[in-house]
Structure formats: C-alpha cells, structure tokens
Amino acid sequence: MKYCSQCAAPVTWRVPPDDNRERYVCTDCEAVHYQNPRIVTGCLPVWQDRVLLCLRGIAPRKGYWTLPAGYLENGETIADGAARETMEEANARVQGLELYTVFSLPHISQAYMFFRAELTDPEFSCGAESLDVRLFHEHEIPWDELAFPVITQSLQFYFADRESRQFPVRSREIHVQRRGPLK
Amino acid sequence: MKYCSQCAAPVTWRVPPDDNRERYVCTDCEAVHYQNPRIVTGCLPVWQDRVLLCLRGIAPRKGYWTLPAGYLENGETIADGAARETMEEANARVQGLELYTVFSLPHISQAYMFFRAELTDPEFSCGAESLDVRLFHEHEIPWDELAFPVITQSLQFYFADRESRQFPVRSREIHVQRRGPLK
Image (cartoon, rainbow over all chains, first blue to last red):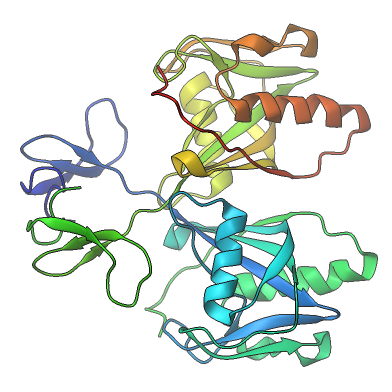
C-alpha cells in the first residue's frame, strides 16, 4: 500500500493515535487503513466411502491435490462460501455441510475452515482452476502429492474419525518458518 | 474506496477479467482490490462458576454487556487474538483456550469465534473500551442488557452445556435485515 484509498495522498507506516501497532495511515486525511487475516473456506466432499479431491491447475502448488477451497467473500456465510468453491473448482453440488476443521496460519495471516459435506450426486468435472477432479478411497489418497498441510491434516482427521463415526470439530494452529516463496 | 492504493489513480467498481463478481479495479494500473470478511475473536472467560463480562464503553451498543472480543490481527493465531482482546478489554489473563462457538454474520461480513477459557487469577479491571468488568453467576447474567446476539447465544450454549460437562463446538449463522445503523 502506497497511497490513501480515500484521498490519494501518500500513506506512512506508523502507530495511529489510541492504537498499539503499526498501520498504514494517510499523511493528509489521517485515515487508518486496517489489514486483517482472510478466511479460506472449503469442503471435504464425500460420496459413499470416497472423498473428492482436485488437482491444482494454478500456483501455488500447481499439480498437487487439494480439497476445494478459497477465500470467503463479503456477504457470504462460511458454509455458503465452501459450497460455492466446491462448485467453482469441481462443478460439484454438496449438502449437509458440517464444520469440521479450523486452522490458524499466522505466518500467512489466514484462517482455514473445512466442512464435511455429502455430494448430492456423483457428477463433477474440472473447474477453471483444476486439472483433474476424482473420488479417492482411503487407500488411494496421494499422501505425498497433497498441496498443503491443512489438506493432509483434514484428511487424516477424517479417516481416523470415520472409524468411530464421531466427527468433533478439530481446531489447530500451523506454524511455519517460510524459507522461500511457494512455487 | 475511491483511489488505487498502488498508484493513486481513481478506481471503478466492475467485474475484473476471469472473475465473476464486482471489485474495486484501478482505472490505470488495473490492480484489483479485494475486500473480504473479518474475523472477530474473543473469550468466554470463566472463574470457578462465574463468567466474566465487560460493559461496553464505546459504540456500537455502549452501555451493554459483552464478552471480550475484537478483530483478529495479521500474524496472530485466532486463540492468541482472543487472549489479547481479553487483556485489552478486561486486563485479564486466560489459559486453556478451547474453540467453542463460530458464527457467520453475512450481513456485516464478519465471522465471530469464541473460546472457552479459564482466568488464571481473579484479578481484572477496565480496559480502555470498558466501563465495568464483573464476574457473573448464571442467575446474575443481564440477559436483557447483552450487546449482541452472538454474546447471548454463546452464553446460552455455555450454561446448557455446563450441565453435561460436554462442550462441542457450536457453529451457527445469524441472518439480520438491518433497518438502521446500530447506535
């Protein structure tokens, strides 16, 4: 951020009055421009005893498998955002969404939230950002080709919990020291 | 938003290329300025059989009781943000945070998340945004003077769940047709 979105004057990085951390503050109108973490919302879509995964067609982690997920939009419930992303990435319809995993990723200022969901039918296909979409039995999951730790952990929780048919919400933090940009 | 924060040219409200909803887009450098929901994180702080509430000293809902909560900051875990807000609003230290309630509020593009937490000691006092801070037994809760529906629902869940000593995560949506600004 270089310029004030209210008045176009340059911004500076300083602690505003009555605050205790640095923000972008306008050098002219003194507007404070807050920046906050984003929510990534997605589904763990299930059809009978298989789980739907998408092969990422875009960076980061192009060519790795993921659960359908993306940024929550203004005006949307978290569950509606998860269903929308499932439609956008896999052209798949889901129902019976139940919140299942919640992850804090402070190093990238994101919160990830996944919902268990049932596919309403076994019809799906690639969305614009996917190279492939498939249903996987547990023994077919490509554990070494999953895109992100939140995907691996959500799938591990799911297959473990499926044994007992109990799916409590799982809340975890993921702390990463980044050594370079994800390709 | 009136001006591009990258180049100071005016922005327009339109659907960017390869997107499906309107965003602020720069008329010169074509930067897309995304706006996304914010996370409000807080605690339901418990000391023995009492719950800590803060009397709001600022709008909206000045003079109504609330659980300590506020916007999650970049670089913070959701639980760390909840503990920080409890310190800022009530000068209170908490431990053993467990995610408890998750609310979608699409009409104001917010997600609220509360953690059950134990006060480490019964020492607390008013932070800058509070007029009073007190511990309440269940029969003392000022149900008609609570600040927001998310506060009422979180307390209702808590006292009901306390009977069984089981506190599953509760995920809910709150849909409101706003008729005017909150005072």
